[in-house]
Image (cartoon, rainbow over all chains, first blue to last red; front, side, top):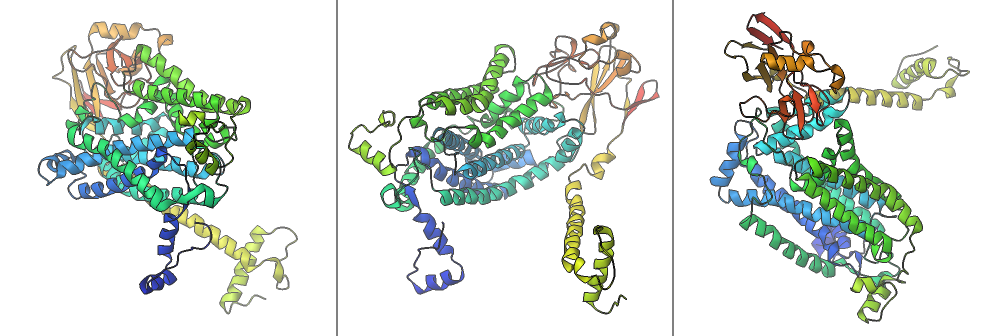
Length: 420
Length: 204
């Protein structure tokens, strides 16, 4: 994307258009972008995420044609979508499970970035814009979850807006401002609907910035070695990666449509088929699975403000990651210690997710506390120190060399692990 | 002499007025003192004023999200307490929130009064919670994250202190609605209550 376009329009209409608005050139540049030739399937999740953003927008716009954001009608209008609207059940299940798949893909995408050091210079902004996208996704999902106006919708929104009441003095006015009342009620529902419709389009803009930013500095790749020769180390994005991404998208869709058609409520909560009742809290409030690790961190702390701050900090610390990891080597393939800690961290994150779904009592609370402490230690203690004391393996000379070594099956230095 | 016959001259004059306030150092305001205050200074100040004005204009866009007049209009409610017998509870709605009304038994009152204040995370004597000891009236919203605690219905789990228990994150409240154990930081809130008659109250 840097420099002038190499695009040469051939037909007269394209020439006329390109001279006035060079948008065809922009598309062309994106499609022929020199992409490292060694990207593995973990790199296909960007394409999968873009696909899901589009799918969510399409199903969402259609659902909005049949949905009524009013506390008296919202629950019934969702049931009407399920029972009366032609293919309404399909669109709603596709939208609800689409959100889950979107988060599954984004978590894989984030952990890929963590493993291969994609957040390191010069890609700090790619990482930070990505985190902003993630936060915006969470806000979108949270507000969307209120719309069916079921028991979990209502109490989830009540608990989450109440996070802000933990702050001294400004807390309660902020909560009332967010809700437009003293409790979650009609004003809350209508504004959540408005913002739930808006945020995906902001996400589209953020995704464009995310792509733009890595088109300036180039893709990272599994070796973490920068492109040295465009000719030797890269291939054109199209057709090589459009095909690879498409294949991955199709495979991912199998899981998605399995959920939509065969287990549409597997990831949902039965309580959300009960209409919201402001006077009765369900016995157990559980957030959607993709928020569970944060919920576990919140509940690990016996102090209200402390729990809320720590939960926000668990995301905030990710923004500092490019400066907390002191190692110059990107890929975990060449960082034997970091690689072990990465897998421990992955297990800790999954463990927090498990604990977030369990009642906050006894051994579960203790386990949540230990894992929460480890979560922060990983970023604030382990990563800065490992970078200083670890001896990395020898890096391949270039991307091309690493690919050829692999193909020739002659054991290139440090490539043994990759082959296993 | 200051002539006001044209836009440029007007600017010069405004300029000089501002220079009185914003340029103190060795600045004389006279016709011969032209280059010291420039039109650019005026532009800076005008831009600043415009920015400040814009900030004020944003306020309605923010304030519209606060509770509106119809929400605030529901802010008081009158309740007749006669149907509640000793040992019974009643839940009513005030400002969209549940209000717990409990007619406490003598034993419950004694339990609440006998607790030493130093045992309480949010120390408050029982007398500060219930103007008439028999009637305990509180906002039934857990002060942790806003769930409705159990304990109003017969057969509800009432926690380790025989009052109310919040199932969401495990907060235990005693027979005066005071927090005893769990993540909630404060006692259940006492709303503004006025006794209109012996058994009739106004909340709010």
